[in-house]
View 1 (cartoon, one colour):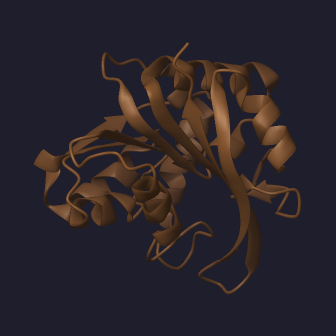
View 2: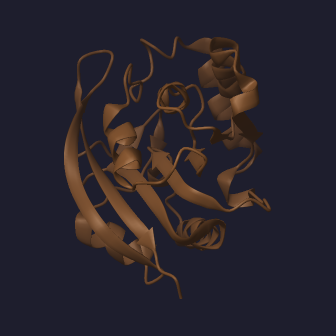
Length: 208
């Protein structure tokens, strides 16, 4: 489980780096994530959780699409404060400062989205815990959208080891409570013009 040092690591990154030019995961327009969320067909009042969303522009784009119940979770308060300052529409977004592995809520989500958080879990017990929480908090028939580094992607990010996935291994890891709808690779160009191979996977929560 992530510890205090992990939180300090991320707080330091968001306090000392320009997130539009100095962090590899930055996307000016997270179009693939938006398209995948729209492809689920959920309505505009659906509960959408962005895990590790931080200062991502996904919340901005979902608000532009007319979604009214957007939740952004991040271990890093500094990242959330930056997003809040930018958006200025906090009444449409619920901001959650939490380690995902310690997350508790009475809310159930129609869509659980995660770009580049899940792959930071490297211990089997932490990976199992994450999947358990997703199964608990996603509504039956809801969607799990995960993007991680592919097998061709980097072995580290922000000085931390990560777990890389293929379509087969992400399917096996997520387990039997979800049905894999589709999985595909995408090359992300970082702000410093390097290439990273991601794999996006969309799962549907089974009703049983």
